[in-house]
Length: 328
Image (cartoon, rainbow, N blue to C red; front, side, top):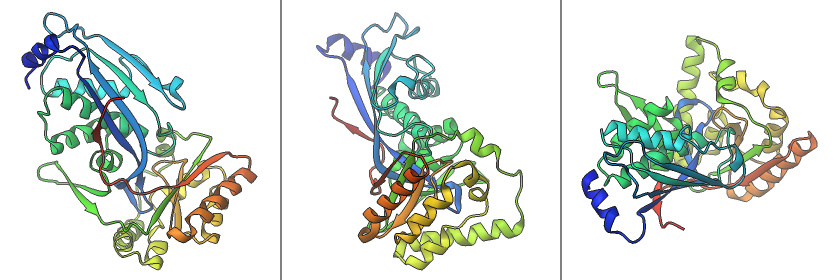
């Protein structure tokens, strides 16, 4: 549907056109997969875009209103600086169409600044909503390229858009991204431990060295390959060994209060391993279903003994990615 046809439709509709997008949280890096591996989780943000009829004569100077609900709603910007709206506008700039007037309602289920891809949900939600209102003129691959350009790297936005576990690699020749879905057995349970303190991505990146040795690069390449096979086969020893990393976790664990204690608690309870989710401070444990609840309880109580309140939940992999749902 072109913009003129969309305006005509809006003029005859008794109710505004409304699009609601559900976008999953993500966990990135997963040990050795620094900046290239991520997985979607069954935890969601929702973005509802309702087109308004007051476009203006040429579609310029669009009207915007934003409401936010859920935990930490007061911290989300409700003007043109809102990240989902910035992504929404970036879409229309990309396709060279006027930005429509909208009301944006955001329902939060993914904690902010915790290493669970909240910014990626906003970017993907904004792009999906814009594309739907414009008549789905960009393909999924085009949306992904735009999302990666806005986020800066693919490890969160790729699984947020596509679902599942995704490995991203960039072509040196074309500079386009290739996404490879990684098989993740349902018997491998992701447990997220979300503490009540934050760690900014900027601070987490600031502690990383500017270069690494050949030995560390080889270590991570080998362990990433082993992790992929471990997730595919469920081989517990492969998973346990594979989750080690030398590129980011050794430098970031000191920024996360209680990391060694919570890691030990997870392993002692029978989890296969524990890593930093994204840039942190959320921690991700992988376990079998029979010990997931026990491991979650031990991680929660350990952090509590250190004065940290944490939400710790066994989740599942989200396999759908960003989807349209019925507005509420």
